[in-house]
Image (cartoon, rainbow, N blue to C red):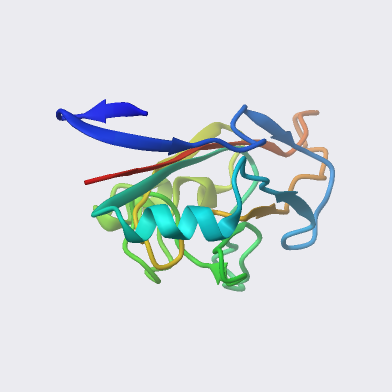
Length: 169
């Protein structure tokens, strides 16, 4: 337990907290990372019900790898809620917005809804906190569009990072 403004915070750890390479597959969601928490989902839900606030940090670092192709609208990356639903928004964005944090402020690269959707030969990042207690915690991460060798000899790839579930209040 840690403290947030003097209030005790319960942190629930899982097996996917380290920065992890996503590489070598193209179809939407072909990369799958199931998240295993140190306590049962029933225990997690009980803690969340007793808490005013919960959050989980989520980050994707991308190199020519997209969440969504603007031409087709097809999602290549998403997270899965505790109910097993495919979630169309990323940390720092409003629930069901189809955006990342930068999309909420219209500050994403290339005017997209996420920085990673720029899909260029540069490292970009989308990150922020998920705070919807109705869908947390993240139970799976899914990505695609990480298989091509680009014209500059580099490969499409990404890294995901998922923080502990934190609840307080």
